[in-house]
Each structure stands twice: as structure tokens, then as C-alpha cells.
Image (cartoon, rainbow, N blue to C red; front, side):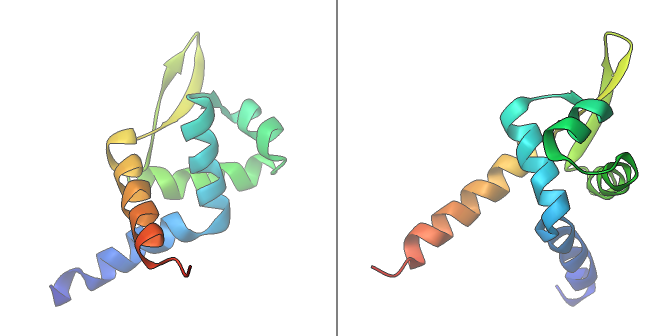
Length: 97
């Protein structure tokens, strides 16, 4: 387990960074979006979006493809939705009442 600590920290750190998380949640809600659409939706600069998309893509949280001659980015639902479900369950179990 100790040899994986760095990988865990990197993966969890990537998704917990607020800009990365904002992009991922937007893609989850809206589906595949191009760079210009993400810029309009989030109000971030194109340079910032590219930087954070690269981080998310390196971890395979976000994937890319071509739609109508435009590069689009979409969430790897197989991974991301499971992570969100685990977090939501944890919050529900430990919420103060």
C-alpha cells in the first residue's frame, strides 16, 4: 500500500483542485463540451481551461473525442460517478444531525 500513496495523493489532489472539480462537474451535467463552450460556461481563460483539462486527462477523469469536426471533452463516467457516489454516501453517513 505504501508504494501507491503518491499515486493516491496525485489522483485525489487532481480531482479536489477547485478548477478541475468545476470542469468535471460541468462536463457531468452538460455532457461533451468543446474548449470555447467550457470557456463560456465557466468564465475561465482558455489557457486555464487547457491546463486543468490536461491534468484531468492525465488521470483519465476526462477523455476527448471529435464531434462535428470539433474537439470535445467528456467525463469518464465509469470512474467519476463512482467517486462522487462514494463521497455522497460518506457525507450522508457522517452528517451531523
